[in-house]
Image 1 (cartoon, helix red, strand yellow):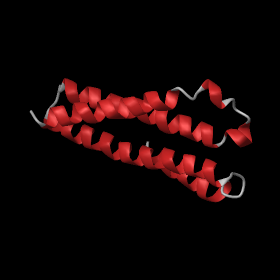
Image 2 (cartoon, rainbow, N blue to C red):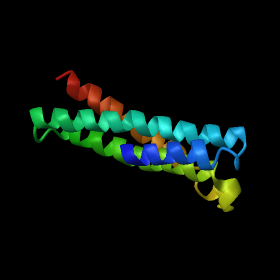
Image 3 (cartoon, rainbow, N blue to C red):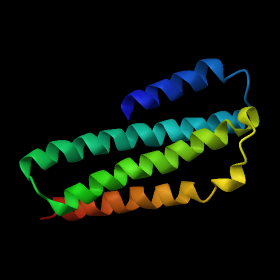
Length: 116
């Protein structure tokens, strides 16, 4: 996940900078930022899982972060480049908030686990 964030960040900063407007670049930057944050959160969950193997809450948190990253950041990358690709954004607009919901659930399950 982290490597994908670096790739999209570099792609946006170098290749797409002259091809997209500021709003589309901000959309891509938001996707990259959330991908990096949740890459670190997923890494934390993995490390914590070694201390508490079999934890259902940690497993759910990790899966929620991964699926959230795919849906939230992935949809923002598609939306941000839609002016170049011609992809019909209206077909995926609902995916972004679902990804955000996965992030929220991941954090809730992580906090719940941490309080045990």
